[in-house]
Image 1 (tube, helix red, strand yellow):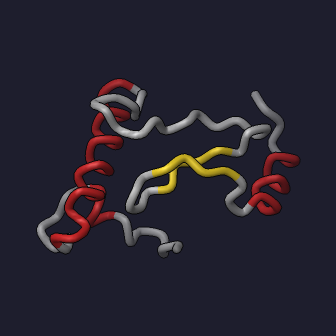
Image 2: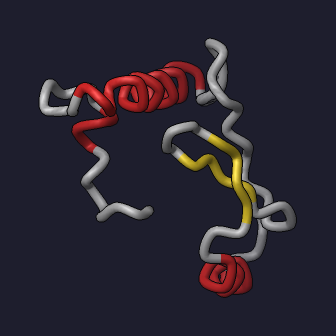
Amino acid sequence: MTSDHGSEIAMVFGQPMVHADDRALSDSMVGYWTRFAASGEPNGSGAASWPAYDATGDQHLELGDPITVESGRQSQKCDFWDGIQPEL
C-alpha cells in the first residue's frame, strides 16, 4: 500500500486524529523521527532497524503492521535516479 505525500503527517506527529488501530504505528514513527532529529540516527529503543541507503542492497523500511525491512521498492525508478546522481 502507498500513500500520498503528506498523508503521513498525522501519524508522524501523533495527532489525536490517528485512529486507535494505528496508534502503535504512529508511536513508532514518532520514535524514528525524534531519534533522527536528536541524533541523526533513527534506530534504537528496540525498534526495527532502519537500514542506511545503499544502492546495491536497495533496502527500505516498510512502515506497516508489522514494520519490516524490504528491498526493491520501485527499483526501476530508483535505478534511473541513481544513474543521474553519482554516489558522493
